[in-house]
Length: 423
Image (tube, rainbow, N blue to C red; front, side, top):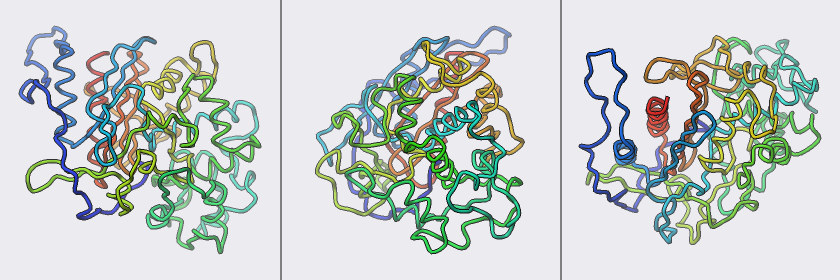
């Protein structure tokens, strides 16, 4: 859910047989018919893997990471398929420690950073964001209505997103040369490189929910000014290090290159098979990359979802939420802050999710409320949720995507099944 894309036409040319396994789709897990009041049968590990592989085959996913934590212990961690296809090759299996682009699930890190400053008394969620900016942000249709941190974090700020601008700032093969400061200032200062007069919706700020990456970019920009430190550096010191997310980073230059996965666009061919091309080909229409690093994308706006990480590492953030803000002796948030993140604001997403403070409230297979986020960006889709009642964390990361959001829906469905298996 970090950006949508136009259809990328006939650039896809790499055919690939997804996973060769002895287990057929006929063995995919299905809940047994049971008219009694006894507990439903828990599927075997073989049936769980079969269900996951069928999800990959049906959706066209080259590689997938899954992890489940219950009562503080990892009870499931399996990776499937491939992290790298050819091109660029050589083909590499997806591993638990492979690193993928996280997309919008990383908005949960951004809101964590904000709540740390709320706890320190440096900001208030209902402060006018202009108090923290060197320029003013106002909806010109509502010039007297302040836009607050809370509005930005709940997608109710009325700030819109220009897809053409987002498409123009992706960069491949290295970190993006455009800084967060340059991007946000260019977006909101009149005459700026990315400025648009119609960058706001018509509704009064604080009255309607419109999902906005740019709102989170403003949050990250303002936060950096509050802490007097670049956004990515602050997150590293205040969140990633305490949570021992040791190989997670916003900068490609700080990541072990041999662990990077490649993101792929996928389309279903007339031959009934999935066809894949790396994101730089499928979305940017660039030539095939010669190396895995050539195929990595750098974005200028990490607060909206630009972390490179693994499902296993990212699960530690959700485990911290589940543990009321602390993990392995490190206190990241106060319990009251976690409660606020998982409090329904009264707004809903177009998919029916409850809107918390950045986090989304979804319904599991038993119609119980669980919290987390999903995401998608060029060549990647992700989903991460936790159930405060059962003490279960589930995360699924995949290295494929298209512009229709169907894969992120599949990963949310997979998360809900994993919650059901281990609750």
